[in-house]
Length: 116
Image 1 (cartoon, rainbow, N blue to C red):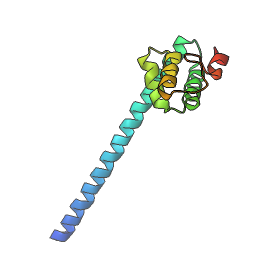
Image 2 (image 1 turned 90 degrees about the horizontal axis):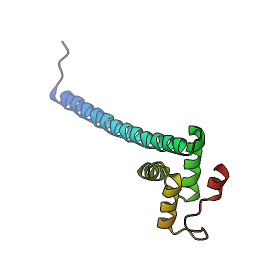
Image 3 (image 1 turned 30 degrees about the vertical axis):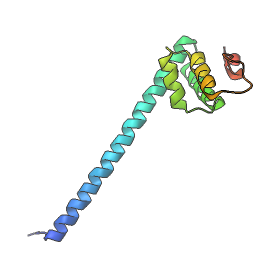
Image 4 (image 1 turned 180 degrees about the horizontal axis):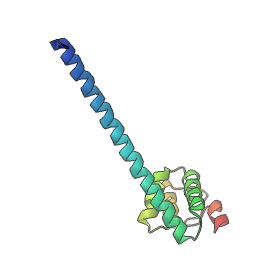
């Protein structure tokens, strides 16, 4: 017979509670990653369709746009989606917020002009 004493039962319950907490945290992180991935895919697809380019090129534009404005990639992707797939409007919105010096208001960055 394999009987446990009260201390072993408490330890077992503590271990199980910790495992459940760890799994819940992992599940939440996976959910956030999935949501983030969906936003990037939607923005990439919208840019691809709107500007008639391959999705890989659309993603590269999105990535370079975020880098050039020192913005979060997911933030820019969300703005692209909110602007109906308009990459230029999302970039202009970020430039206006950041107060980019030396850039003409509404002008596209050089990498954007090269890909048009």
